[in-house]
Amino acid sequence: QQPVQSPQAVILREGEDAVINCSSSKALYSVHWYRQKHGEAPVFLMILLKGGEQKGHEKISASFNEKKQQSSLYLTASQLSYSGTYFCGTEYYNQGGKLIFGQGTELSVKP
Amino acid sequence: GAVVSQHPSRVICKSGTSVKIECRSLDFQATTMFWYRQFPKKSLMLMATSNEGSKATYEQGVEKDKFLINHASLTLSTLTVTSAHPEDSSFYICSATLIGGETQYFGPGTRLLVL
Image (cartoon, rainbow over all chains, first blue to last red; front, top):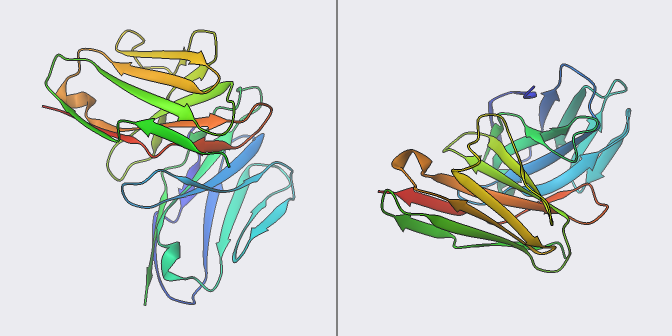
């Protein structure tokens, strides 16, 4: 039941945009997005709970589709500090808050 | 707010010994803590869910007797890797949720190396 993330890796120049997708085969209770830098713990970015929801955090935003099976993370005007591995964590209904993480998307922002 | 600490940050031990890792929520109470394992360049794999005052719930394939979890208070959960072997070497990360909250806040992780 691991969600599928795409792409697996992306390389950007500073100022470019990127989209990371996270898909589930069945409806989700929520989607959580995290960024992890090498050797560090994941850092929480945002959580989406409602179908059709869109949420923003500075130049990083995310959406959750109406069927609650797919979420996308949008990174606009990327900065060097955006580099890292992005994970979506998916929570299914009645799972007591348990998250199943996607395989990750490695993002590299170059000057 | 919502800071989670782990101790130790790194540990090297000999094969056959046991290692205890502590996970603390510093500025909030957490009824639920989660333990994950992560191999290099891989995803976070949930090992178990730890609820204060009750037995941990382990994911399929995780040995309960090998990875002992205790959640003695609303701010502390411990993971003990018993009779550690080189294949147990990994990055172990805990997370905690605020009471009634949805978000998991992660600790800084513990890197275990078993020789």
